[in-house]
Image 1 (cartoon, rainbow, N blue to C red):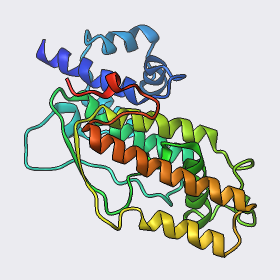
Image 2: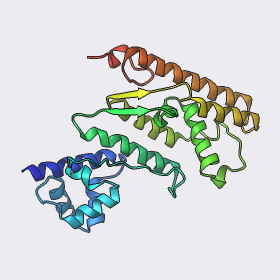
Image 3: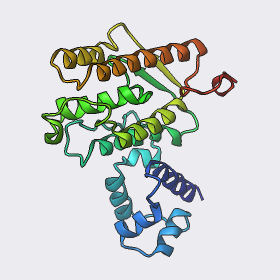
Image 4: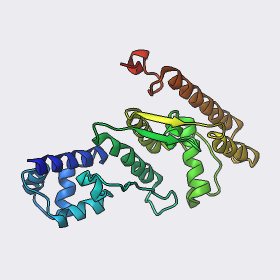
Length: 246
């Protein structure tokens, strides 16, 4: 019974990491070359996974065996996806980060401690203007994407709505995790310097584009100050009742 329960919890976690349009049972059918009925029996815990099946699933979904078995040892399992790795798209990279955040949700007792040498990735996706600029910066200056190599930043052309949507999901998932964040005076300097450089280099299509991004940074900082004052994390526009401490 305990093994079946653990297997069900494992699949519950995997479901939470999949995009909404994908079915875990379909993924298992293709990956393990089994029928739909066999996939559902594994999902319900009626048929235990073999070690070979578990290996395939862990490789497919980038999960460690420690995570699956909840082993109590002195090791720390974590992933460090490379921003410049060969992802199909930047949206895939963000989905990878989102899965890491969602990993915390499988535990009843959880707490995250985050040392913010730079502003946290999910806070770049609080507002769409900053989200668009940071996505553009990642693609142009870090990944050297040929499609935008010779293009200036424009909110009209580079909204990156798919990345913003994933970033919002990532932020909402993060907000549900008890967390202590340690900030310092340098935490926003990298982003501010990036905007300043792009402005001086003439890489904004219009002065308005730059102004919108700066205002978005200021709004984000105001939002973080509001969270600190409330002692709770929440999304912009949430009512006070939504984020009031119980």
